[in-house]
Amino acid sequence: MSAPPRRVENLHTDKGKVPVYATGIVEQPWDDYSADDHATWTTLYARQRELLVGRASAAFLAAQDAMGMTPDRIPKFSALNRVLTEATGWTLMGVEGLLPELDFFDHLANRRFPVTWWIRRPDQIDYIEEPDLFHDLFGHVPLLMNPVFADYMAAYGRGGVKAHGIGAEALQMLTRLYWYTVEFGLIREADGPGSSPGQALRIYGSGIVSSTGESIHALESDAPNRIAFDLERIMRTRYRIDTYQKTYFVIDSFEQLMAATAPDFTPIYARLARQDSVPAGSVLDTDAVLHRGSGEGWADDGDV
Ligand SMILES: [Fe+2]
Image 1: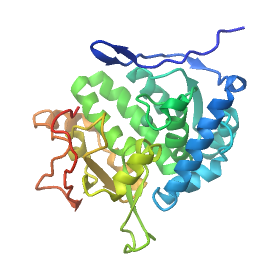
Image 2: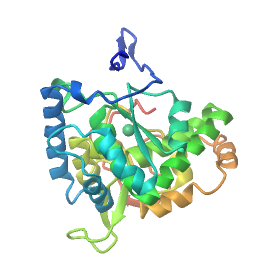
Image 3: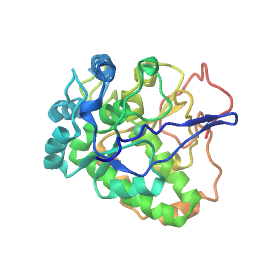
């Protein structure tokens, strides 16, 4: 018998937290989940689904329903894979924690999505630093059912492998794109109550949909900027890892996102490397601003 998979979490040292990476692909130890584990999933699933109706992108909600994720117990990756692989050719695979960048990109490029097998402890129900099963499965996986978004994720993986070969600056710019789209992206959709057609703001980023507080903050708070998607602007923009975002970028469609990955990024990286990075909360003259943030509650420093 092989050893059970490990639960790889950040290390906390006297110099702060240190991420720990794990490369192994593991079988989901579904029979080993405790009653607490299933209860954590059930609680978070019910809470977020209720909050997200009318807030998340219609495509996200439809995709989540089409996958058949079990609300009352942790879904089995094998059952989800039967639906997902048929729909878009993606496969979920269990991992123990964060993957090194190049491994992660290579999996995406080959339509394999790494999902952390373990779920947060009951005392972490409202906040956990590292991605766990709830963030990965509830937040990231549904949109892999969407053919255009599924293509975007694979294109991103190919771009990541390439950027990794170019150097640290290119990788940093590409990471910002992931952050402001896959993790914290907003989309303009039709049919919003009280909004004109095509103007209703909705969430599609995984970091938002898997967070109760940020689901409300991203759409309803006056504090953050909401700015129309602009590839090169995003590649220059620093971000927050320890607070809600100061700026959200808004796409009009997943097709727009996919189209943005069509050009060769190599000359873009070279050109942007000569420009200053933009602080997370700044608004530029060239921005198409949907909402200028009040900045209330922002920390002055700490952008990464
Ligand atoms: Fe994530």
